[in-house]
Structure formats: C-alpha cells, structure tokens
Length: 223
Image 1 (cartoon, one colour):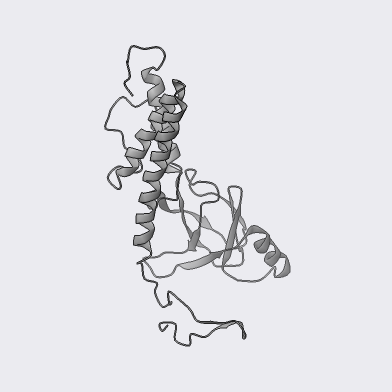
Image 2 (cartoon, one colour):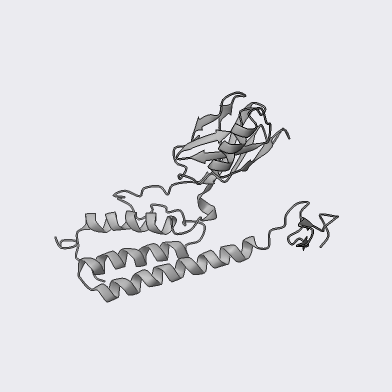
C-alpha cells in the first residue's frame, strides 16, 4: 500500500493514529508476558478491607496474584484470589476469619482485613502504552526487544486500516487475518515454552480418585 504523504485522503497523522490503534490492538490481543508487572507499593493495614488499584496502569480485573510482606526478607504471605461473591460470603459468614484471600470488584482490591499488615505486592497486566503521534521511527512497542513478530502484526493491522479507508475491504480482511495469524503463532510459542516450567513441591499431574473425591498423591513430588 503506497502512501503519498502530501495526500489529504490518507494523511501522515492518520497513519500515526493507526499505528497507535494497531499497537493497542496487538498488545491487548493476548495476556502477553511482556506486559506483566509486579507492583510493590501501598500498605495493607489490618482492619481495612478496600484498596484502590495500586498502579493506575494495571488493566481492570488483571491482578491475578497478591502478596503481603517482603519476598526478599522471606516474610511474604501469598493470598489466593477468589471471585468477589465468594469473598463477600466468606467475610459475612466468618467476619473474624483469617484465610489469606483477596478479590477485586471494578478497580478496587478487597483483602481479608483480619490478616497481618504489610506492603502490598500485586501481580497483574499493564495497559499498553500510547505511542501517540511519535515523530521518530525508534518508538518502542510492547514487542520491541522481545518478540518482533508482534511489530509485524501491528504493521499488518495498520495496512488493514488503510485499505478500509480506501474501501478495499477484502484486502483489509486479508491483512487483519495475517496479523491475527502472526499473533496466534507467537502466543502458541509462548505457551509451549511456559508448558515446560516446573512447579515447586507440586506435581504437574495429580491422581484424583473420583469415588473418594480426593487426590491420591501421598508424596506431592511423585506421579
């Protein structure tokens, strides 16, 4: 798709906007590891249940892990995330319960207020940064320096915007499909790699007795 920078039909400003839109689209296509972030800020205080998201750049409902304390000092407590209705029911049924659980609703974290105070460590997904009307070709995307195939997908998505502008809808569909295929292949490679990660003190597979309704692994390190 050739572009005349002097054209008023497709302007340079349009292209830069499409680049920003394409970047946001590709960066949000999957929960990419390169957008994961651990935020260490804010203080959990015993007796207080609700907290604002500690980082305004976290995506809504993306905080999947939470700990209170200090990892380096070996004193961190890992909290389990529960769906909000289960968390609320637990707090109603056991108002003094000390189960280390948390949930979120909207952009508010709810942490069992009966647990020990300390620094909040949140593990979530960041909103992709805005490229804006960048004046340089050196602008970075979430894929830069990691998996540059993602940048190829962004370019294909930008081309699809351009072809839609020119009412060449089949070409637009073809470029978008190619962008999706590139990102799907990248995601599969990432998943294949993550499948090789080993758990600590837990088996990858467990024997489950459907009659007794229990796990049969006596030794958690054995299959």
